[in-house]
Amino acid sequence: MTIHHGTLSYLDPERPEPWASFIEQIDRVAPHLGSLAQWVETLKRPKRVLIVDVPIVRDDGSIAHYEGYRVQHNLSRGPGKGGVRFHPGVSLNEVMALAGWMTVKNAALGLPYGGAKGGVRIDPRAFSRAELERITRRYTSEIGIVIGPDKDIPAPDIGTDQQTMAWMMDTYSVNVGHTASGVVTGKPIALGGSLGRHEATGRGVYIAAREAGIRSGIPIAGARVVVQGFGNVGGIAARIFRENGAKIIALQDAESTIANPAGIDIPAALAHAAAHGSLAGFFGAEPLGDDDFWQLECEYFVPAALEGQVTPQRAQAMRTRIIVEGANGPTTPAADDILHERDILVIPDVLANAGGVTVSYFEWVQDFSSFFWSEEEINARLESIMMKAFEAIWQTAQERKVSIRTAAFIIACQRVLAAREQRGLYP
Image 1 (cartoon, helix red, strand yellow):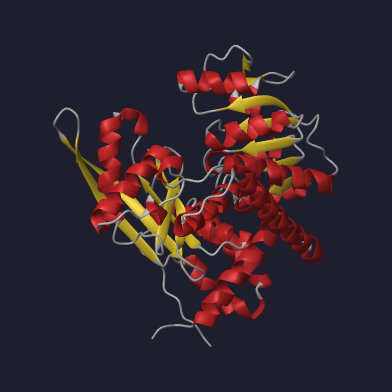
Image 2: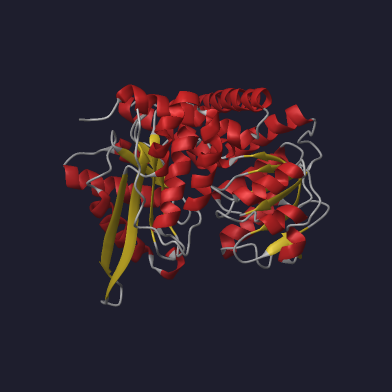
């Protein structure tokens, strides 16, 4: 079969990232896909892109408009799954890339989902709670034509939380005329949320780091850890690292960078960040310059903030043994090459931060059955799925002599494209 391709016309060629990084990652895996490579263009173009206007009445009576997105990258293996981000940097390019990484992540873990992502370009700190509710409800109504428990299931991401998901679930439920708890995951427990979901992404980062350390001879106990990003992912990962004997020597959030060679008291730092909105002013560590942060000597470095943070320049300067990607797309392909040359092991986002979507899957299953599991069961099932996926990806990397990222993409893309091939083209 010969397949002819056009070009995507709605992207700004002057600002190619991060979609360009995702496309390069797909190009790198294509030679490993055998006969399935003829379908690889499927992964280079989203199945569905929705851009919506989100108008609200602000508290002062003025009318304001915001731009929102929902992208369904691929639905060959099941309904779309991916978070909703409220951030001033949200763009179509970013949401497309994040949806693509969700496709790969879900397939790499063996979850029965395709990839999707959404967002609204706002700074949530600039709005009252009432305004955020109005933005969330209007956005949900606008994307309601493409989401649903068996179509596309949003979840929290940067700038959103379980309250956002409660508003989304309620809005969707009101519009369809019945309670549809499975339309989103990451909900409050009282509304059908899952125990263990709040900590799942950070816990998964720790599990991935631990498994990498076991295979690389770098134990967690006594290891020095640097964490960029101190939100739901970085903060919880840092806490679990510390509980297992690691020493967190530096932290960075949007406001400040701090370090303490003797180890930062993570519970105290979490309490400070919760009380003040950032790490700025925390007394248990000293301020550190940004360049120095990226050059700290450590065993584990966890980028858990935004995409594109590990640049070629930073990759050249980093002095770590293992990078565990808590964020989505934190390392550019060019930086990946430098890290590989420098023998720094990278555990990629599509594996390392998959704990959140894995427990979101558990939540979705529990909502459908109206039967809920204990937190111990949740954590045990998460551990089992992540360890199985890690072992399969690690073995593929060894056998094919490729990076862990390429191995994860090989497994995921084979699964997605096999489903595409078996389903065929309609009509």
